Image (tube, rainbow, N blue to C red; front, top):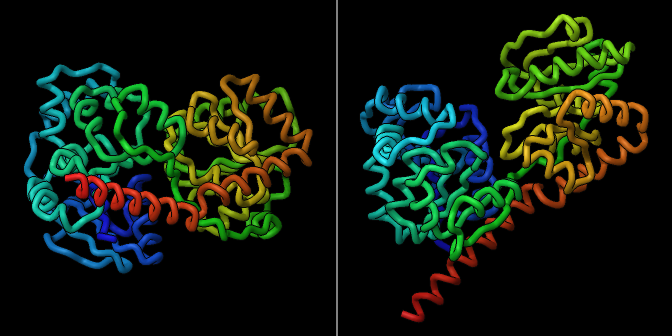
Length: 403
């Protein structure tokens, strides 16, 4: 089997971001399984840096056994890009000319695209992640016959851009993190002839947890709900805090809400007395907290996957998610490991159900854990990738034989 390349706008072993983490973990596990992989990226440091600044030197370095090839980023007109991007952020579709500005003035590397064109025969496939960046658009354009997208689609204005609809309907394949993402792509893009797989994201399923250890370490005796993740309005944490405050008014008692993760958010007075913000904790403390909670609440409406939901299930606890997030609500339905809410009274009803039916809640947690191990354990994901690559090579041989 030829080597496979993963193409991403920026890459390092420690930068945050869902696509960045997925790339790190997928390539590492494929490498450890004996599948030859490389990462192709720019010299840009990370998402929040200047996309014209070449922070890293050009060339190849080895990170945890995986070659990382870096190419110079092009200079760009940030102001022109921002004028178009602000429209998209507000749900306003740009003109055709503005779409060209958007894709040409974001992070790009002509040297990267030249490398893909000139070396494409050395690779079985180029996996592009995520969809909205120049490295994906122009990378796909350089080798559509070997282009496989891991798009990380959300139902947002960018998905509906005409240039994306035209280019991404030509790719060889698309891999999706969850079924609702595939269903969205099927509505927006022409996927006839595109090899599609609902792949999912790998999860480390060998984690262990001890609830009593968490309670003893943090001196928390009361029952509690947990939220784990970034604390900002984009994750809809303000809604959880508001609903929890209302719940405490209507259901006085010793139930607490524990927040784990970075960021800052105003905690309303109604919830302040019963909310404990632990900030960042190490992974083992997070797993122990998940095992000790009544349930984990993931209120975000915009997820392409949710590692904390999977971790909660692996720790044996059910989850409560927002019904407006197609991905997490689908996970809850498919697994039988959670419930979902859309307004306060649904939140109240779900919380009451978990607290009043502890045996059922425990069973839901176990069902969720089984769902994770059967669908997202790394050995399962690696074999899905191996099968996908083998099928691509076999199709190429058949097509060449016809020629």
